[in-house]
Length: 120
Length: 144
Image (cartoon, rainbow over all chains, first blue to last red; front, side, top):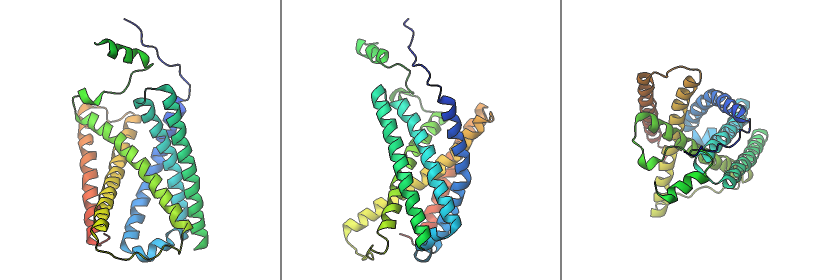
């Protein structure tokens, strides 16, 4: 029987694994905060939504939420790409695409939240 | 095994995940694949939400008031939008519940077959229940 060739380790697996868990733990309080603030928004959408980011806690928590979830999300998407895409150059391309999209979107949304926080 | 299949396996340098078409379903595999599916859903929905916030910020004050229209197209879009919101909400609750399960496994707890099966069902039921509560609250407050 032919032995299956295994790709050499890049030695980044443990850091990747640990980052995924740390961001997961960080997301627990952030998601609970998100659900409660969505309830608050739902009770008074017209009055509360336009000034939502004016409150320091809301701006702070939502910037943290976006940053941590984009990091967690790109790590998770990387695992899925590595598992289901078999072509090696495609794997690298998709991982780069996910990282590029995550970083640009995170920067754009954090700037937007800061702007909404400061003009209100 | 056919020659074509053999070549396919030799060309890939590592084993791939379970092939879903020839897999016998059980609760552990369902929760696992749902964790991945909901994760991908959440990734794409957070992208859309983030770019919507960016759009809202830079067109602040210039978004004209929505005129209420009873056209068919608008209503269809409303229904699709509501369905998408429900899917995202369910994904969020499910990924949250099942993620906590995964974290317990990472600290080495809950590996007994009975416990793992039980809290697998629990995470699905809890996520469904929370989604139903959310739908009821949204309909009660007439947000749609």
